[in-house]
Length: 403
Ligand SMILES: Cc1cc2nc3c(=O)[nH]c(=O)nc-3n(C[C@H](O)[C@H](O)[C@H](O)COP(=O)(O)O)c2cc1C
Image 1 (spheres, rainbow, N blue to C red):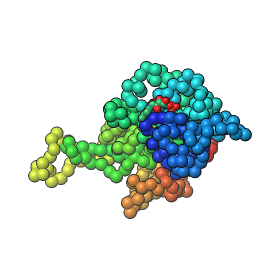
Image 2: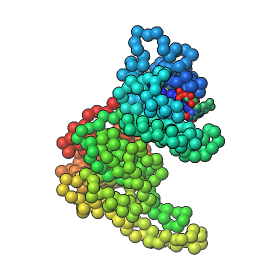
Image 3: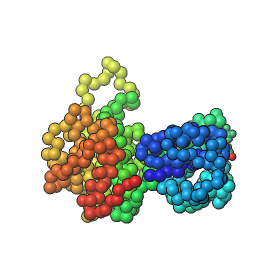
Image 4: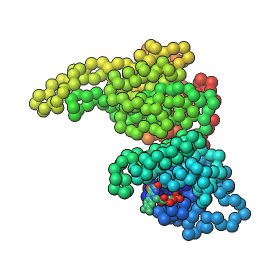
């Protein structure tokens, strides 16, 4: 993707350098445009060196309105697949919200027809000011996207809302905005489950597993990118992805009730969560002391989410599950598919400690007719795209390649 990264004069401008580096490492072409104030915080030399592309805008090396055979603001506006402003200042938000264009960046922002993303950062009182909030609402009404600032300790020493969102989240929002929507998957409602469950033994001890939730989160992102409306039910500690309605669930019972509530309204479900099969029969109210602990733990069954969803599956709904197996992979997966009325099971080979937490993985889809060609080995983000593409193809839907 060709990304135009506008950098106005906020104290968080140094984080834009990290973002430019991250995006370049991920294979995007990034061109930075500095405002006059932005160039007081970060140098064009840093940005040009990190991106391998020239840095535009107000800076000592390159006159903003230099004589040129091309009209630079129009050329740049046409060049970008996406324009992102990081960190968006109160001033830059206000200018574009009101149609002002008195420097290269603000002029590009009026001239572009590409998606625009703002990641604001400022003092809490500034962020909460009605003028700033009105400008943000106005920009959203133009179809511009926002990665809202978060709460934290700000550079001015205050604590509150106004801190620049995490750069990984900003990069995720850019990915979502720059993706090729697929007409066939637009508007389809898909439930995705991800992550481990945690069953309490007492206030400090839990029964859990080694799943992180990264595979399910990547599947949710891939579905979001092609235009599906994704509902994610997420266990574990990983951050919720951008633009996805996310419900946090700690225990198997919580995950079950969240899924049961959503399922009747969904077109399909991909269940990638590693749900505990058992939980302790009782949860001690106080921390169990060394000598008092029971010799054996008494465990009881947790609700079987996939079995329940399968039993309630209506005509036209599809249900895909995962099986983490360390032996007889295909036989076990096929048994699970039949018992739980699944349309496909993706088999994860976890022998020798593979799959959980790893960045690269292989999945073998198993359908009623038997195992299919394996997907991978691939990094989990690419594997998730391959999985969504494979399923869309089986449904007879077309998927175009992402940039
Ligand atoms: C040290 C310093 C830090 C600043 N940090 C911010 C900030 O975080 N957010 C913001 O909206 N403005 C901040 N400002 C104010 C902007 O720099 C000022 O409004 C400027 O005119 C913005 O111009 P621009 O939007 O064209 O880059 C800061 C100013 C200074 C001197």
